[in-house]
Every structure is written in C-alpha cells, then in structure tokens.
Image (cartoon, rainbow, N blue to C red; front, side, top):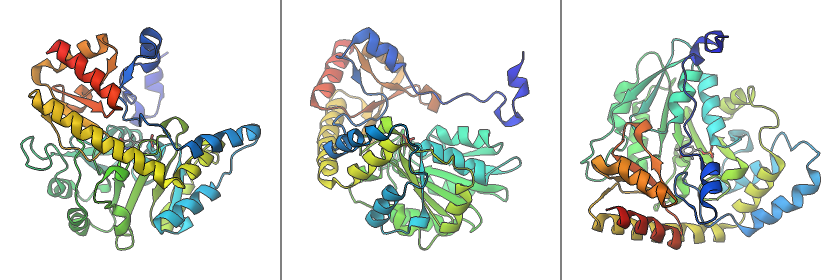
Length: 367
Ligand SMILES: *Cc1c(COP(=O)(O)O)cnc(C)c1O
C-alpha cells in the first residue's frame, strides 16, 4: 500500500521532526554516566514544589484533567498581567505552534520564518498546506547577532499571501537575542492582517527581562508562546502556553483537544510558577556555567555564538562531524546541526559543572 499517496497532499513527503540522537538507546548503552547536552533541558531540575504537586495528583489519575486549566491560567494571568481569556495552554508550546499554522494558514497561503529558525516552523507550515518563505539570516560575522534573525529581511519577505510570521526570540539554534525596541519597530512594518508569532521558549534566560508580552496591547496580531520545558525544567510534562488577543485565542480554542494538558503537568507548572526563588537559582547557575563553557571553548579556538539561552551554538568547521562522533563515543550527546544547514556546527546545552567538565575533557581527547 502507498500510504504516502493516500495522505492529504500537504503531508505527502513531509519529514517528521528530528529529535536528535536516540537518547533512550544511548542511556541503555552508556548508563547513568551519559552526558545529555542535546535537547536544551535544564540539568538542575524543577522546583521541589513541582515534584510535590505531581505526587499530590497521583490519586486522581483515573479522572480527566481540568479541560480549562483554570488554576494554572489564573496563576499565569496574575504573573504576566494579562487576562484569562488571553491565554491558551498547550501540550508543550510545540503543539501550539502546530495549531497556529493549522488555524491561520492553509493552501495558497504563505508563512514567513528566518533561515536558522526553529525547525518546527517549517513542519507546521507544510502540515497546514501553506508555503514557507525563508528570510536570509544575518551574516556569520555580524557583531552582536551572528546568524541571528534579520528583521528587515523578514519584513521584506512578507507579501500579499503571507498569513503568519514565526520568529523565536531568543532563537534556537543560534542563541541570539533581539532587543524589544527592534522588535517593536519590526511590528510597525508588518501589515495588520499578518499575524506574528514570537516564540519565547527561552525568555526567562534573557538578562534584560524584556519580553514581547509588553507589545501585546499595541499589536493585536501578535502571539507570544512560552514553555515550562526549559527554564522551569518540566520538559517531560509537556506544558506550554500562548498569550494573544482574546478573540484570536477563542479561534484557537476551536481546535484544541479538550484534555490536551494533563493533571501532573498542570499541577507542576502552577507550583513551579510559584517558586521564583528556584527559577532564579537555576538561571544564575546557567549563566555562570554558560560563561565558563563559552570561555573554555573560545580559548580552544572555536567560534561560539553569543547566547542568551541555556545552550551554545559552536562552530567546529570541517571537523564537526568527527567531533560529534568522538563525543558520542565518550558518552557525551551534542545536537548535530546539519538539518539546519549548519553541518559545521554543534549545539551544546549548558550542563551542570560536572557535565560541562566531562564535555570539555572529551573534546580535549579529540582535539
Ligand atoms: C524547546 C523549544 C520549543 C518547544 O518546547 P515545548 O517543550 O514543546 O514547549 C519551542 N520553541 C523553541 C525555539 C524551542 O527551542
């Protein structure tokens, strides 16, 4: 049977998201000494309050979760100063990115994203049946944002068929960050009927604390997505959310699966949100380790992209493939970047002190 031929045209030939190396297989092979630096997870773990909240929910496993996610939404609304009707929860923000394309772009429409933008945008666009227009990124030798988003190029790529723009800030995989003033000027250039999604999966790591959330009131076509997977260390529970105009959220709700976020995730996210001290502690550890790791790599002569996230994009040149293989052989998992058109680079998540040391040791045995 030719099932590819049977599926809807938009999905024919579409390649599934590549999650990197098979970590389950690697854990089995290497055991607990495996150093996992491929998925931008938080090595310090979530707030103890999140663990307690999950345990507290175990008795209710036979019940459906709250389809409205009311408690978590109230906590998010209070924290971010937005209305409850401006929020939608997702099974990770990945689900919301897919839904945004499904809802707002279809056959004959265009979606704009940047070169070296997050891989999910292309998949979401194609799955929706729309066409992706890729705006060229800033050059590698740009002073502050090597390979980062070029907002002028993105605005120039917006045409009469454009329905949606996806941009990540800070960006994955480059780690680069755009200031709020530049983002605000960019939004002024975008026609009002073109929706702009600012993916803030790494917003908590931004030193200035700036967020596109502050631009929502003046830009009704702006959607900000966030996640509990990175700074809040709850990747395994799959909780993300989007903030936008209430009427836009109401349209999104039409396609949301009613129980898309589970009990444990809801409870853990609410508890994690309430533990600002733990969040700040993790962010401080990350910043400290990121500086050490970036310095160590630069000292060894490798080009490191500036990062306001929990990972570093490192250029290893023609040796990237051999270095990747050597790291794997020594039980260290990096993320290859060939899929992003950057085969000369590897993306390295900031680990804890010990993990980073073991990564550098492995690297030094190769170099
Ligand atoms: C990790 C990541 C996400 C998705 O995270 P979820 O776990 O699905 O919430 C979204 N955007 C970017 C840029 C990311 O790096």
